[in-house]
Structures are given as C-alpha cells and as structure tokens.
Length: 277
Ligand SMILES: C[S@@+](CC[C@H](N)C(=O)[O-])C[C@H]1O[C@@H](n2cnc3c(N)ncnc32)[C@H](O)[C@@H]1O
Image 1 (cartoon, rainbow, N blue to C red):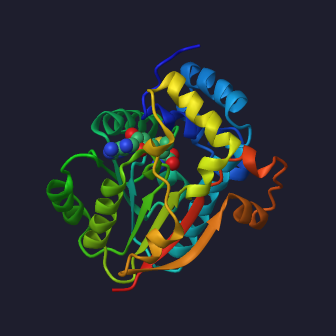
Image 2 (tube, rainbow, N blue to C red; image 1 turned 180 degrees about the vertical axis):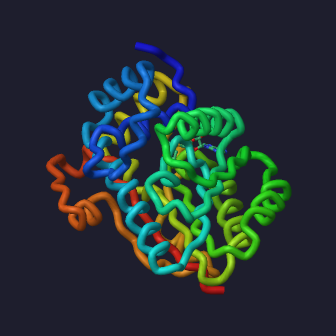
C-alpha cells in the first residue's frame, strides 16, 4: 500500500470514480486520468470507507453537468469558472462554444494544462477554449485572481462551480471565497456548490473516512473538515437558492437505485444558486 496521499491526489481519485460508471456520470473522458497509483488507493478506499463512493461521485458530476448543459441551452451562461477544478472534464462534455476558466493550485494547473494540450493535439480530446489559472484559496489570491478573471470574463454570463473543495478549507476561507464569487459575478449569474452538512460527522462512513485520511494523509480530527448547513447559502444575501438536491434525491431523478444504509454513505448536498443583486 502506498502511503502519503496529497490532498490534490483526491482529484485523481474523484476522476477514477467517475470513470467507473460512465453511464451514470456521463463523463466519458475522466478515464484519461487513470493510473496505477490511484487505482491502488481507490481499491482500498472503496473497501475501507464506502463502496457507494463510485455512485456518489458520478451522481454529483451528473447533477452539475445536467444543470450547466440546461442553462447553456437556455442562453443563461457563456463561461464556466471552476474553482478547485482538479481533473474534472466538463469542458469536453459541454458545447464547444462555452468558454472555461479552471482554477486550482499551481502544480495541479500546470499538470492538467500540459496533459490536456497534448491530448487535444493528438485527438484524444476535442478542442476547447480553457484558461488555466493557479491560485491557493488559503492564501491572499483575491487581487491578482480578480484581475485575471475579469480580463477573460468581461461581462460574460458566468457559472461559478465549487465542487469537492470546501470540505478541505477553513470556514473563514470558505466565506472569503463566496465574497469573491459575489465580486466577480453579475446579477443573473449562477453558482454551483457542493458541501456536506454537519450530520455527516455522525455516520459510520465518516468515521472510516477519518481513519483512512489519518493513516494516509495526515493526522486530523473531525473538526478539521468543513461541513455547512443550508443556512450558509441562505445567508448569502446577493444569491437565492434555485435548487437543492443531495445524493439520494438526485439519484431518484436519474433512476439510480441506492442499496446501502444511510450511515454507510457520504451524502453530499448539491446547491444551485442565482445571483439576484
Ligand atoms: C477532491 S478534488 C475535486 C476536484 C474537482 N472539483 C472535481 O470535483 O473533480 C479537490 C480539489 O481542490 C483543490 N484544492 C484544495 N485546496 C485548495 C486550495 N487551498 N487552493 C486551491 N485549490 C485547492 C485540490 O487541489 C483538488 O484539485
């Protein structure tokens, strides 16, 4: 067993989960990121934490893919800005005329940019317009990132996505990010966010997740992981919640049946917000 997973390597795991049930995730390109090291972690993780993690990640991807596709079709968005994009493949699953900004830590961004440009060159991926930006949400990124985003975005109608990231941030940094979203977006723009609610910490699956991370990433306690109640979103006065789903409710919509007990599932909440002011 390889030890010491870096936080960013959870991004490889997320991609592998999506590749393990393409008919559910609708992500036919995530398999490009598969590699031997991630395969070993994924195998252990599914066994030690929750077997349902393939489906939870696929349903999450499916929710945002469906929503972004729909909003694009209705001419409500022109640019997707993905914060902590990791190795997600939305640009290639969506219409070619949608523009993209992908933001993550610099080393992830560099790696993704190189691999993507090579895959586009050799025809493994269709051509897409993606702007890659490096930033660390735990540092002072606002001024520089604001300028870079505005130069690309101008007044285009945007969809901001933050998926699989908040769990790893401190509460004040999460608040700061949402203030930042408010600053870069205009009235009528959309925001997609994923978070766990506090009750996740009472589940058996969460205890096993903590154990898994402690053995392989670093010693942490349950307070180190950020969970958010729906009120966090309700309190964002410039936004209103358009849709709130979770793994169970969206599974029903896409005809996916859930067989495991609730305590053995890491159930995430998916929020779609619209900026109203
Ligand atoms: C579990 S992955 C999810 C990736 C992607 N959003 C997805 O759903 O496939 C978490 C991502 O958040 C990024 N991330 C975590 N902390 C960050 C920080 N402080 N600044 C920028 N990115 C961060 C990681 O590098 C990683 O790519």
